Image (cartoon, chains in turn brown, yellow, cyan):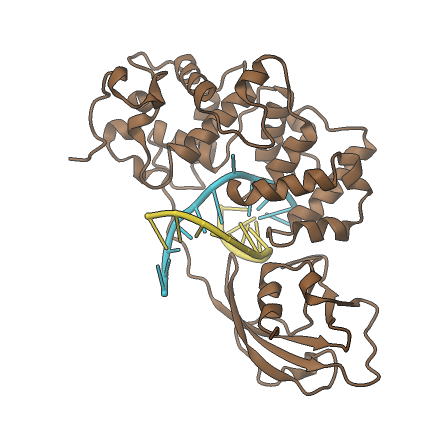
Length: 372
DNA sequence: CATACGTGGGA
DNA sequence: TTCCCAAGTAT
């Protein structure tokens, strides 16, 4: 017998987590929403971009700029990673106008290490667009037009920053709803059904708090592995919990294996402790970021890669680095040389002290093994 | 609809 | 170690 497949205990005997739990039927949408909002009132996470439920009820609203910035940073990125980076961004550019006025390369540099660099390019583009129109739009429809703002972010900003009723569906809410209604359609086909079921229980009031309540529940209670159903405020109306198979939802298709790719990068050093970097093409992998010059990254490694080196020199192989991208494994040979006399960098290249270069992680790894 | 697009942390 | 995946978007 599954540990969790039991009847709900009397609320007094359960951890303080679900004092606000729904105790009995009927499980109307309104009761589900109330149970989650009550739970949020006492269990909301304290996050730097968030106005907590108490202050929110007193009329305080979060800065749309901060909400937007946090939502973009949180796309496919953990809260723990985002927290300090969000603080740095907000300190450096306190307003959307300030960010819009900054050079794109500064925004990319501040983003270095966070991944999915199209987000940073779109972040800057969006800041410019918002500044031109005099501020953030306050509807889902208008938000979704902006660069880097899709279904999720448009709904999240509309709900959290502007208190619009918007059905917000991220990975957490997807999981909560899939379990709540035991939706066994495989992802991503289940998305329309999940959105519809979320819509059913979504309240007209406190839409933003409800979105955050669902996300907090998904992150801390209705977790992907070993969900804490015993302290869940809505376990008694959860179909998956009733069936005892909460971990089976949502249903995900088997993942495909990642192919291997190889390449080489060339670390050219000058006499001033600097290294030669170049700006990567605007589109594609690590687009717009600084990196070491090198070969393309392909399935078959070529023996003679030195044609792609920045200059003919005494290249010494110092080792290799491995890195895992979303869709492939990379092994990078790393070569080092001193710039020959009379070497002239091209206009798209720049000399930077390696410890000061703002680089994507894979490039940081490559640079690190060139250091003594 | 499928694929490209990063990274780090936890089990 | 290996696998999973975290507040997705663009094409």
